[in-house]
Image (cartoon, rainbow, N blue to C red; front, side):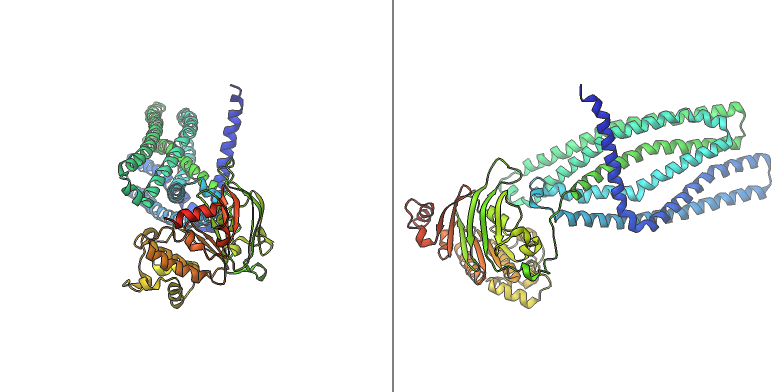
Amino acid sequence: MKTLPHEPAAKKAQSATSIKQTWRLFKYLQPHWPEFSAGMFFLLLSSLAGLAFPKLLGQLIDVSKQDHSSKTINLIGLSLLGVLTAQSAFSFFRIMLFVNVSEKTLATLRQTIYNHLIQLPMNFFLTRRVGELSSRISSDITLLQETFTTTLAEFVRQIIIIVGGLTLLMMTSISLTGFMLAILPVMVIIAVIFGRFIRHFAKDVQNQMAFSNTVVEETLQGIFSVKAFANEFFEMKRYRDRTNEAARIGMKGGKYRGAFSSFIIMGIFGALVAVIWRGAVIGLDTGKLFSFVLYSVFIGSSIGGLAEIYTSLQKSIGATENLFQILDEPAEPITNAALIAPEHLLHGDISFKNISFHYPSREDTPVLQGMSFDVAANQKVALVGPSGAGKSTIVSLLLRLYNPVGGHILFDQKENHIIPLSALRAQMAVVPQDVFLFGGTIGENIAYGKQDTSEEELIEAAKKANAWEFIQRFPLGLQTIVGERGIQLSGGQRQRIAIARAVLKAPRILILDEATSALDAESERLVQDALNKLMEGRTSIVIAHRLATIRQADKIIVLDKGAIVEEGTHKELVNVNDGLYKNLSEMQFTQ
């Protein structure tokens, strides 16, 4: 019970945050402010033209009863036609301008969020799923598109109609207007209370749709595993549960919106009956009473529509909060990797000094503990050890995907954080075990290692990677589409394209993360030959389970449970009695 006094303060803070986030969104409108202002001007004219319509209709009725002059009747009729024509023209320009502004603004917002997203550090992606993030860029921004194009304009239009209509009503009959206004404050208060109540339902639906999109994304990305494990029905159920939950929350919110709309409609028609009755009692002219009723309908429908518009705006605020949560995440300091200062060019020396590390999401599980080792320029160093020993973590730290918890990483005797992040990564290349290829052509995938490259350079890189032999057999050669994640190529072909990509990049430091472990003998021979060529004249860090591939390494570092247990050449380590490397070697070479 003690927390109750703090609840209003918490709600106030939340409301203030929502307003602040909304104003941040409007900053993206600033470059298009002249167009937006013009749209608002046409919106004002369109709304005022609409307000003139009941007044002229009332005059037409009064003139037809009091003055049978066709000239006057025709004049009012032509005025009505002119108002309708003007309103149509104003509406056209208003819609065209608002659509233009919203498309430009949301394109900028999409680009800003995407640009920020790919600059976020790896620890952000440890806790977020791809489907959820892609939903933020698609679903949430689509919701904002509706807001900028329609909802915002409708909100302003309804306000103009209510204020202008009330002014004209008071000019017609102050007493009758006061009578009608008796129920309006109640409606407004209920609209605000209901709008706040409905808001959290809208946000929950958005979240559930993001979760369901995650299921779709994961299922389609892992469709091979889904099929191989015959888990189609499991995935169907997972998606059904998510979408049903979104529907359940949406229907619950719909009940409250329906109840609210019903109450408003009942109030509006009740007010109309009361207004007509009251107008008849005080003896108001037929034309004026007709105009008064029409204005009352306009105002009543506008107030009723405000509830729906307010709900839509609350949805948009919810979507805005989600988007700005992403934008508020601190990004990595990315620079132009093509412009590397001479003092940041690497020779290839690497030193780990007493490095300790644990992943941000698992602070109670140390991965590396007091690790120290040196790698000389142009040296080939192998990292071996059982799974979970920390080999891949060393690669992540070299690339500064994560920063160590303790200790120092040096490149050419300089602290790694002194070298700009992009300059550091631009001078490294990784050939992983699980190669990711983009869904375009073979040429585009190889060129990912170096932009603006010629076809001759691509072919030369493919030859060095032993990939040209199979590429030229395809009818389209380098223009062959590889399919989603390279699904149309074999494992060995994907590996050689990844090697060609690394060849083109010409890195100073090369990292091979179990690059041959999943290949057949022939593919492994071709890939290993390509890797041997690639490692010449550069510092190479090789992670390998197959010890046969690292016998010629200048140094082998043996890891176990996050610490270095042995270090030396192949010949030195196989002679260490009861050594881990010797045991691993005997298990592999005696099979």
